[in-house]
Length: 373
Image 1 (cartoon, rainbow, N blue to C red):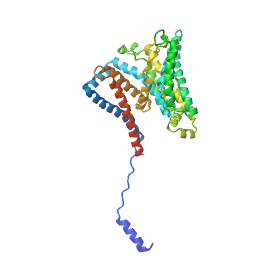
Image 2 (spheres, one colour):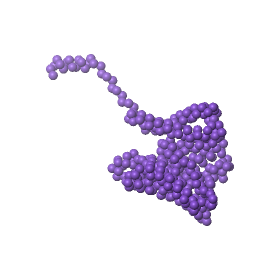
Image 3 (cartoon, one colour):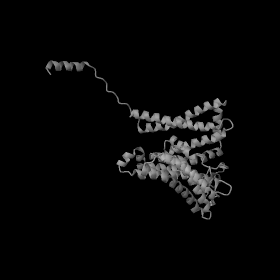
Image 4 (cartoon, rainbow, N blue to C red):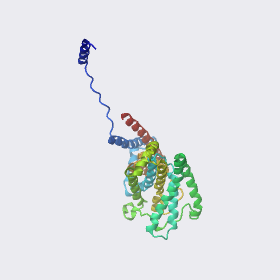
């Protein structure tokens, strides 16, 4: 380049203003992302209540009065609180069961069948061991229910691990088999002309709160709630403080990458689904040992399937599962409180709307976060 050309280039560079550097878009930090994920379920609940208010108004009732009546009946007295906590206990168990499987990339639809098998086994063992002291019979009844439910989850787990068969189909089919099997075995285990087993021994019973907190008199709330909360702590510790929990979450994020890193994916799937079944099997502790004192056919009423909604709303986090279980339990008992004012189907509508909004907002937030990163 000649000297005049260089001079012209330098003058052009001096005359042309420099563009200010563009700032890169700020990426949301881990705390901001976690906050957004936590706000999603709360917004879903709020939107569902707004939509529910529209349904209430459509039947000619005042939404504010109906919601106030519901809140008063649910949280305005110890009996209502006890009912909510009692209903939340099995939802915590099934929500944790589904959430643990989700973390491993598995969709456990079989919690309903697993909890029925577990509760039936607990009822039979608790009744057969009446002569045993409570220090033996109580843990034996609990562990037998867990073991039976875990074994019931084993065939779908092995089919997934060894053959790649999808766990959704297999666990759904196991639900029907479980219900039919219990009905068949009931011919031998049920008390004559009833649909329930004999009463379990006194040593297998779990104490109710009313025995040491008189304010809960008449409420079926029992100490299995403490067991449910302990399971939530255990699942949190297992997932984020142990090697197996790390492997489980790694498999859930990417089985191929986990296998490349040396993780035994089939083993992890098998253990995760069996642990999921064991958690579902603890539902019998609440109903059989803490409430009725025997297994009764048809007691579950879809608790296993509702656990899927609890896990989804709780973002597969043990703390979120507990909060979601309390919400669904309050909604379920609140439906009974306002049953004389609005149709009982309103509660089912609200539950469905909450799930739809929660899933939608989760997808929206995930896409927004991906665009920001």
